[in-house]
Length: 412
Ligand SMILES: [Zn+2]
Image (cartoon, rainbow, N blue to C red; front, side, top):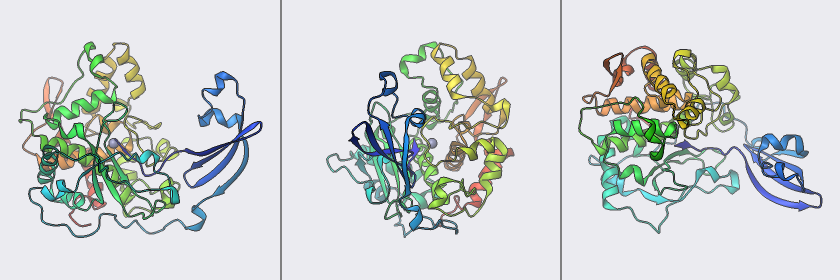
């Protein structure tokens, strides 16, 4: 579950030059040529691709700017990529009809002339059942979500790869021509699920803690419950709106108030600075966030972020390590404390500021789509409805921020 609008590092080519191997590495907009000794001790050789190990070994040869120098950084707020007219589509069939499979991996998208937009895999066709699942999700969406979904450049379905279910949101910056696209991909496994969105939420928490089926024997984590019957349309809507949330974060450049944000090179400052107060100021160590700003957010990676409120604070790595050794108490406490704080709409939201933004959007959408379906979490012997969190305190200010950024209206 990532929005991949830039790639951290990738190696363009290798050339052997006698005693050194020349490696061209592109990081963001800069190209570096570095010389690495051709023969490395075996123990180092295994790790030579890691930048942290490379630094003491490299002989820095040259650095140049590929694109940044040609194009000044924008100073105006970004113009939304969600443009154009939408057809009337009450049952979502037009939306579903446009979906196709893809094998595209945005993690290898590249920049500039090396970039190719995502495309359809014509060798596989979507079954009617999967189209129906997409149509139901669209039909169930509030109008302000339909207004975004109908304006996607393309909706994709992915096969599982490397054993993982992969859904993603991808927003094409100006450094990836034509620079106007916005894409969502949902895994076909998500489209086949019969469970409720509440069960899907519980699955996500297990996935965050890397508790695969084989590791569940050590017990259950505290979970959400609902008495409403499973409605697969809502479950799919939850997945779509999580990824849409990542695309909207990029589209508005909501987290790009600080001019040092790497995406400020292609995207101007946001129309509202509310992310800094409503999200960072309320719930996060803002300094840490600013030191590690990024747009690419891989599933379950905290990127050095730390929650501001120690009562709701946790480190996924520590929780995973304990769970791997059969100790679930730390995870149980962390999940319960996150809900007790009423600061985050979900445990997933407490992973990083970006996921906080995206999950707040998703829960706002689910609450608007299914307000009559309470989502219960047990706290001190009483059930609380987590959808009510959106209406007061810190989460309500986060929702206001989404509104300030124009994400809760049907306008492009
Ligand atoms: Zn995410």
